[in-house]
Length: 232
Image 1 (cartoon, one colour):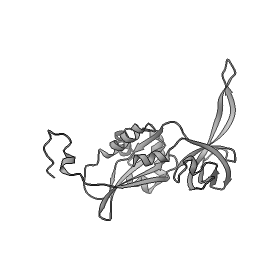
Image 2 (cartoon, rainbow, N blue to C red):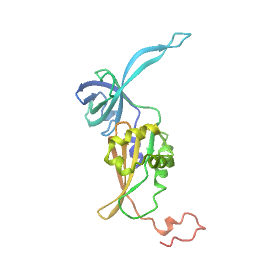
Image 3 (cartoon, rainbow, N blue to C red):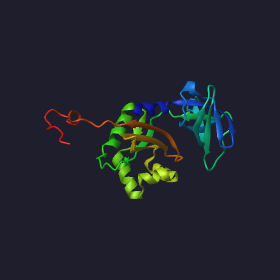
Image 4 (cartoon, one colour):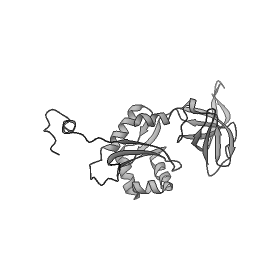
């Protein structure tokens, strides 16, 4: 499942080719690694800044314009939902779009158990966090800090799923770009783990993965040779 999440967050950069209302068109496509559900930062390059002594150009200032959430991907371009910032100029052709090359800051929510199994699921957010950290692509907030903040704010996982507008303020406090929301559910008699990526910036659910879970046998639950066999 984590391998699939990595495919959604490649380092990409392209240009805006057209803007029509809340639709934005980019010159990056499937061959570049673009997939539905990705969220790009939209920016505009400004003046060059230089070294104060040598006056050599070091880069250019950038103005953040908003975000583009990919809705459709075509052979030569992609279409996205444009979410501009409340203040500042709107995007126009030749502005830039980017999925950062830096590590993406993320937070994993406590598991929402819809199976009423009363299983001990406290380790699951840590397992997801460790898998993401090991990939080298993500920087994940300590799940205990996430749990403590949700308790302090009086926010439940269900509320974040139902009311996306509540995601942004909590996300700003943790300084993350997205939330991973794990849900345990039952479909066709099998238990599944469903994990959804929710943008901490816009509150939109962008990408989801679901995998069936196989119940571990006694030999698998006995982690070390000196442990007694599992009784349940």
